[in-house]
Image 1: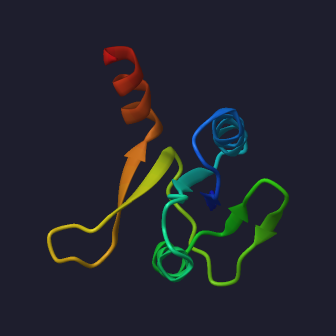
Image 2: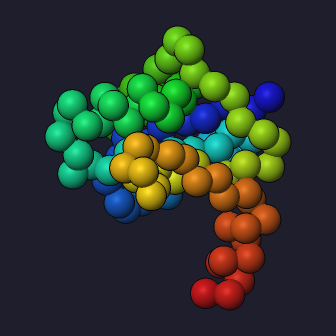
Length: 102
């Protein structure tokens, strides 16, 4: 099963390059909002349970990460209606369709 990679980058070329690399490796990505305080960032990672964390200088495997389904592209964190964090999965076909429509 493919892994879920937390991309700890701000917007820009580095983020896009790493996202493309994750997809080439067959992995899905969860973007980490750079504006989050450290405690919120740690909570996000705990809840989303990525298998790896990539940032500007490192690529680290994480214990207790969860695999995703083949074809998943993004797992976007949201507070949902209950206030508890959730991940909204976008498949690669959904991302492609959004790109074409845009």
